[in-house]
Length: 109
Image 1: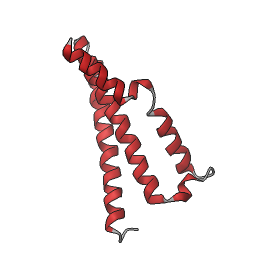
Image 2 (image 1 turned 135 degrees about the horizontal axis):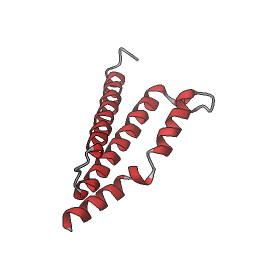
Image 3 (image 1 turned 45 degrees about the horizontal axis):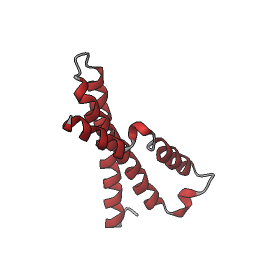
Image 4 (image 1 turned 90 degrees about the vertical axis):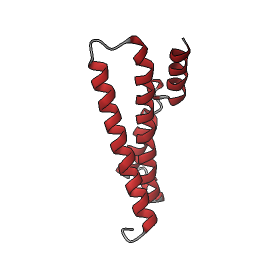
């Protein structure tokens, strides 16, 4: 796979998405620790957290695409990781639709 431009592209994309998700989550955590955080900032931070969850899921999807159908075998640790990220990223606090809706409400209000 290392000789395949397409595979290298997907690997680079997965790595980029994972790093971006990590940076976003750490930035949200730092902002949330701020004692002077304005209440109006919370919807924006939740939207950013939802974006990080979406990036995590997309990164894992790229890795699964690279691995092929064997990655979905029940005994494969990659399948369990994919399932955990897929389920966890659907938590209401990571739901991009709710994040955008709440952020839009905050902006309009």
